[in-house]
Image (cartoon, rainbow, N blue to C red):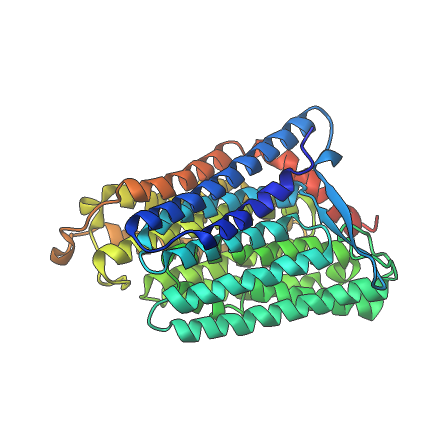
Length: 498
């Protein structure tokens, strides 16, 4: 049996730590260490609870059961409106895998916070608040609660971009705020359509709103698709994400591209496909078309970049097009594959951004042309970089391999031409990642880089947990697929008209 309060602990433990941090002093180096340690401790407990939750669910599925109802928290909340709302938390196979992704990356970023030396109290507090918001979105099963947590995630990202960002941080933060609020507004309109027009008088996200049909369902689907496309940073809504993660400090950039943007993918699956199945099926060819264009554009644009951070950003645009391909295919195989892909891509992209921060700190440059031969001076850094690259391009033994096999094998029988085009585009993206790795780490070592320090104990502390998660998901994908399938069943049943 899973304790019913476990999800509340996972979501709100970081918020409690944030409140505690407010009253702690922030004057000396010892104070800063205390603040960082508290953030790391709270995040570590959340990671532990998420892993325990996942193991209990896996054990339950192995015994022939499902996700235990004891893991669900449902308490009446607002009843004075024309609909009822509840404090409803639950975690199925989809949200549970992404919850583990979130807690892993946040845990590593709190280790990375030892690199932050200005306004440490504000940084740790905002990061804790952001973790509460992200985990809250993943666990919410009520639209009102869902939107509250989604809106909460906007504030910490904006402030951290504005305070700790690079030279162009004001422009990047302003652009992020405009796009984030637009996405939030569109999603709110879609939710209002669901609640008001379905006639169910409830905001429960798990309700099957079968009354939605025709133009109402089409409008809701396109509102959701656009909101999720902006949040995910797909073409043509990608510029805000490129600018934001280019100007953000490495820890913030890793969380933004690895976790926060993936809320768009989660919402597309949960709301876009789950609540508007007829419209999703009707417009699947258009969704697949966006996937093809995004994969081609992202791959070609990445090759034109000399800035390492922007190269990683455009590579991300190409890779996340696979999420649109799965959303346009809508089979159980592709949906299970896309959840695995979100996990692998979140880990690899977050790790690459953190490693990019390590490189920038040591060589004081983000120019790819200015780098070369670093494998001689920093062999551990090179090895970690290639682990992340191999994950991103789907090499066997790493997390991305099984995900891409399931995605392409599930989409090819339905969208043959589109699948081939996306695969060809991703070959270009993979070649770009390999080429950049070769330029940065191999060849003759430049004189200006001969004293480059290799990764130390601190860097290994926040990079090795990601490596462990990557390898574990790559070696044992079979341990995750039953859990994910258990969560995908409800979506595929609705898509099939059930």
